[in-house]
Length: 107
Length: 240
Image 1 (cartoon, each protein chain N blue to C red):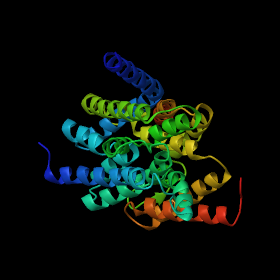
Image 2 (image 1 turned 180 degrees about the horizontal axis):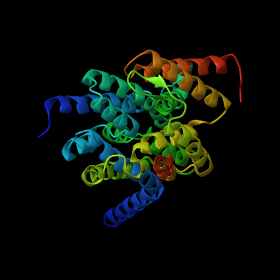
Image 3 (image 1 turned 60 degrees about the vertical axis):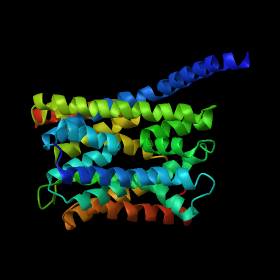
């Protein structure tokens, strides 16, 4: 049994995810995006990923406070180096989980 | 004579296209599996059932936004705020689809509709590299997208199922999302300007997260940081 609010949520998420995937291929395969917009969009992935991950590493609690000694932050450095060296998504996920698990045992 | 040989040739071509597509797509599947598992486990812990988890993977098919949606759900966020956050997180596909569109001119409308559904960070990276470097065809690209899609849905459902048997916090599963973001971030660091944008976005996000409750810091920080990135590029500051 699926709640109707949940159905509304996934349909909404699906729609707003699908539209940006579809619109450019459908309408813009013959035209170019305005240059400033293309340049701005080019920085969006790196900016979003960074904006997602940094607060996760150094803030905790509710309301949030700054904490530079969180295991999440300490483990992030070796995980980041592992990603840089191997460039493997699956490998980094497993390595990060292992390191975090070890950190939990040690700290 | 021509008529009798054509179906055989077409069949051969279809087999070849599928093989090539799966060959290019399997590393994505491998990468998706632990993440899909982790997502399934987390979503199950957040109180979603198998059907709900599978439905989200099928309808949305975008890893990071699904993780964020689940964490916002368990924090009690509204449908509208989750949908808006999803939109902003996945807006980046606009640029990916724009770059791919150049190679998809021979595709008809219904195939475009199906192809667009499978545009992810990973399939984009694989397909664009192939389009640039080899004689890659839209059919092969479509196979890559759909192979990855099947792997994603299957792994999230397996995760949702096995999640019932995994205790909370086991095997560092809580770190899967952060590790994935860190690695995808590494993939995006294609030069000094991108690194600067990442640092600006990260620092801004931390400040905003401390100042404003809720999740709006993600949108605000990334929009602003990308804008600063453009200004730096335009003003020729820190050019690579």
